Structures are given as structure tokens and as C-alpha cells.
Image (cartoon, rainbow, N blue to C red; front, top):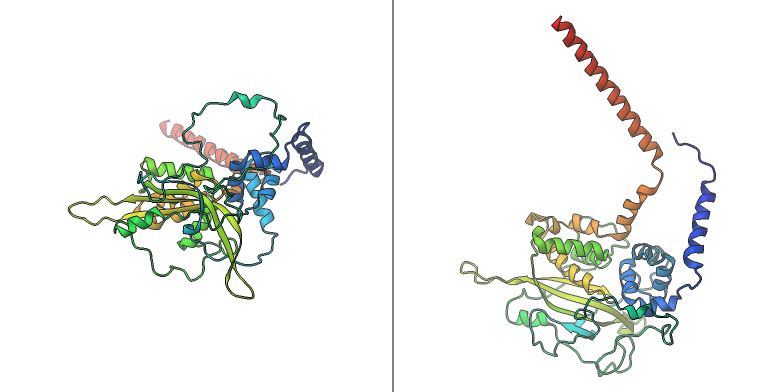
Length: 383
């Protein structure tokens, strides 16, 4: 039975007050605008996993969670459920992306050229001790800086939209060469599955899989992707045909004219990952297979991992690889479920644990009694 504890609600309130004092009531609290300006990668991760793209709300969630990305994403997920659904956007093609970064590991020279953009890939991993200097130096509280296109405009505004260069997709050239499976003429699903409104059942359609991957926890997806590369999945070591960052136009159907109308731009990271293609004398035509990843904001690590996992999930569990099993992968990258299951262990389990102890003690007593009886019987038999 439960043991009555007095003051439970009071203790919880005191714990919340302590958080307010130690974190939000600090002597030099961090401002919401500082989170947006100085922690953009954390903010993008939180908004992606929280399934709600709003930099201001994302920054508030990061502050409220004291920088814990899982907790901040949970806050955004919860807030998202309170918002009305006003409509649906028209499907956007990445061919219309306003690109700020674009690289390919498969080809050195690609039409339009490679664009390094904003990246830390080539810098030395050394701690910059200059950042120990006074954080109140001039310019330290400036507004967030957007990525800049080649023409000097921001990818998220409409200035210079007509002058923005359009880059072809590398995978189109693989298709033209007959090395990649042809693009299907018709989509495989009439309407995309909505994982926020319908329970997922396995095997899940690809639209559901991509949604779950796009909302998945970055670290969990990275771990699974790495495990696959080390031989625990069939994906192996593929190649990035193209990795790009930029902004996609968001369009809705105009309620009066019925034509698509652009209402804004959404920063995204997209990855096309290819593997296979090893032709042999017995199989001279071995097309490359492709995995696809796209996430909101700047999160290349997650986009690459998503593309690798997508490739395996298309094969399905019949391949015999655990990382190709939809239920295993999609269930274990879900951050809110994972955090809830693990952290619920901190809640009281008094009744179940006491019951377990009582069963163990009873079983031990029965075992000891049976052992004693066996010893006594053996002793009587020897006499």
C-alpha cells in the first residue's frame, strides 16, 4: 500500500521556486534575443525536434529548459497541441530552394559549383579562449544574423528573389545516366500521413516515416546511423550526392483565386545519400539506391543521419538488419516518448517495488524451506 507523505505539493512548489531562483532569477540572465543570436544551432535542433518552427518561441523554450534540448523540444510539442490548424501548404520542391550552402561528396565539379557557406567543418577544434572576455562587450547582444545569399539578400526575405540562383540537383544527373532508379510518375500516396493526428501502425507509409525521422532526436539518429556504418546495418558507407542548406518557399492555396500564394520561407537542410551501384559480371546493372533527409533549420548531422536511416527503412525488416526495422528505428528516435519512459523512473514506484520485495522474500522462504526438507530427508535416508 502507499505510504502517506505530507507536504508533497508543497515540496514540488519549492522545487519549482528553486528553479526560478537559480536559473531564471540569475544575476545576469540570458535574454531571449541572445538565444536567437548566439545559439542558432541549438535553437534549430530544438525547433526541429519540437515540430514547431518559431525562433522566438524556441528561444523561450530553451531558456525555460535551462538549455536542455529534449526538455525544450517537449515544451514546444506541448505548446504546438494548443495551436489551431489553419490550412495546409503546397508541396515544395528543393529545386526552388534559395541556397546558402551546397556541397557534394560524390562529385568535385557539379553544375553551379560547390558553395561552402557557413560551416565549421574545416576549422580546428580548439577552444577559443577569447570568448572568456567580458560578454557585455559592444555588439555581443546583437540580433541574430541570417545566412546571406550570393546576391547579398537573406534566404528568408523576398528581396532579390528573382536574382537568386537556381541550382540543379545532383541526383538528376545520376538519373539521366541511368544509375539511379527513375523518379515515379505518381506519388505513392494520395494524401500524406499525418503522424500528429493519426496513430502510426507498422509497416508505416513513407510519408509517416519521413515525418517521424524529421521530428526525431538528433543524438539517437546519429547513434543509429553510426552503428549502420560500422556494420550493424545494411546501409554501410554510402556517399553524399548533395547536401544543401537554404530556404524553401512556403505556399498555400489562395482561398479566392485557388492559385498557390507564397506566405514565407522556411530554412531547411537537405541531404541526398546514395549507396550501392557496384556492378558485377553477374549483375551488370546495379542501380544506386537513395536515402533522403530534410530537416528544418541548420542541422546537417541530423539530415545525413535521416537520409541513411531512410535508405534502410525502405528495405524493411526482411533484410535481417535491425536498423532496417521500422518499429525499432522509428520508436526509439522519438524524443518525447524516450525521455518520458526513462525519466518516469524518477517517479514513486513504492507499491510495485514493495510488491516485488514481498514476492522475492516469499519465494526465498519457500526455497529455503524446500531445501531444508530435502536435507532432512537426505539425512534420514542415510541413517
